[in-house]
Length: 114
Image (cartoon, helix red, strand yellow):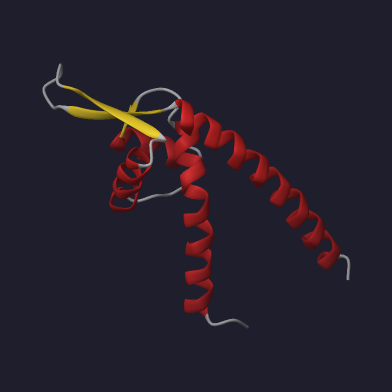
């Protein structure tokens, strides 16, 4: 049996790899960080704020997200939304996700059949 710490690290790595696509998919409408955490959790993706906010900043610096401040409420909020480049990236990542999913499903089914 694999070391539990190693398994946890590998699982974390796998989840981290899917987070970028998940965030881009959830940013079709303007959303702020805490709301995005909640939406992702509701979708079954647990992410902590200290993981999400650096990712949002990185995606913005890469031109995949844009942000704007809403100061109309008692507490200012920074809203993020996907850019045109972000949509193109979602399309490309989505195609690759589906391809990998087909391959991995086939491989796992073959393994289970042994």
